[in-house]
Image (cartoon, rainbow, N blue to C red):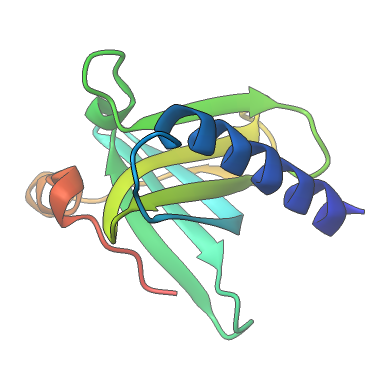
Length: 137
């Protein structure tokens, strides 16, 4: 059921992306991943996710500034859906374009946690420009 719902959400998202960019010839690639844990830090989110291979967890860091209304490249959608938490990434012509985190609205949910790392290391991990964002899966 979760898989079908996730697939339907990806298809809907693809149609939305196609509607926005359909007139321009662009190669659009969208990928969804199930989230294991979202770690909250004062600089952003650290997300661990299930790799499609099923071997180990992947991890990435996204700063809060990516989710701003002005020039933001991300969205956080809070909800209670049984398919949550997961995220989608959009690449256009091979370059990162947008990320959407679909997370539980209840911050006491087991998929939420706090990230405690020292200041210099935290600044290094969260100092990411969208142009240089890569995710290994």
